[in-house]
Image (cartoon, rainbow, N blue to C red):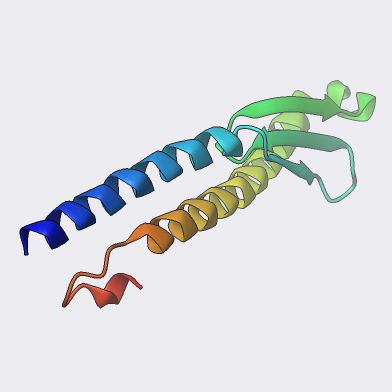
Length: 107
């Protein structure tokens, strides 16, 4: 029984290392999003860090319109990045879950 507990702890530590490595890797995964008319484009990492914003000159004439474009496009990009982030981290966590009786709801 004690050996099983040590084995489970080892698996949990290995999973934790894999999760941390996945988080670092997600800094290199880029998510692009554009406005429907391609006047604004943003790039984020899967960890939701903004890497670039490209703005068409037409949008520079109207501050309110630019703000609206930024809000809509950034929110869509953040949503995409969050989905990538969560699915990658969930896959690593699920893979490393030890087989604990009664805890198979996570598998």
